[in-house]
Length: 446
Image 1 (tube, rainbow, N blue to C red):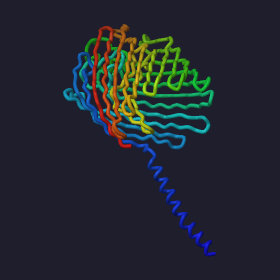
Image 2 (tube, rainbow, N blue to C red; image 1 turned 90 degrees about the vertical axis):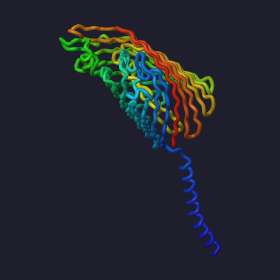
Image 3 (cartoon, helix red, strand yellow; image 1 turned 180 degrees about the horizontal axis):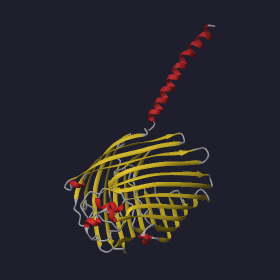
């Protein structure tokens, strides 16, 4: 009896100890898990040969001080993520270009047990407009020009092991702070429905339809009768412009082939028809468009990529939101250095891109890129009842190379050099270029 009593007493003493140790171990495991949240500060210094982004523009040096933050949290089959950044850009001489830029993005990725998945994404950004913001349009004054871009998109995918269906919709808008850029402001809606079929684990074929609709409130120059069409006050008055709605209809054939674990090819061939609601019908287009992309990684340190694109219409140069960088489960938005706007007076655009990456060490990486684009531009005006159409081309090319150094878990350093040039040929010709060199430092708490 006494022995049984001792065993029972021992069990009563051990059970709380086991529970305590289990709880402590659980806390330790929880503490070892990476935090889904991060907060950081950034500082950069850049020397720019054409800070105004104009022909014969002035050079200057500017600093950018910013805060970044965000989170990436999986919740069962769901995932919530968001990131934000704000930067103050201070110029040494051209103080009229001082500005505050920002980027906010968030999304919800969801999935169900019935092979259904999808996402909802939203973003809002304000950043310096790039030198080639809108085809056929040049900032002729040394004034600050910030591009404000907003986008909301959603997609739904039903996918089995062999066959899948996908639908997507997006709405976007772009505005500019420069007074002369009111003619470039527009909003767009795009919707698509696609079906794909997997021939095997490495090959996916697809087909679908895609519709785009872009509204440009001030697309056509139509001064009232009796007004002097060359008067700068008349040209700068939004009341002397008419709207245009561009509608694009596309039938797409797509293919994605993972040749090996290190290389692959993706392609799209489309029959495209673009129509316009007003005399901007000179921009109408019917024909083939498409894209071809190749990725190749010969070693674990080297990566290469190449792409060729031919697109039509106002969405051929769809604006880019600030890029993101990912480390583990955390995603952060980098500083916005330029936003390309919708090109509402472009009929077709051919573009080419090459990229190369080299992981020199576990902490040091090098990335180089080369891009070229050539757009067919059609400018339309109605003056004294007569339609005046001016054809032209807008050609640009850019090169960049950057080095990143992950000095420590929370520290990241980097430097980048780039060159960009642009030649616009229409009724008159304009040419200008830009060279910049900058370095940055980022400290992040995770």
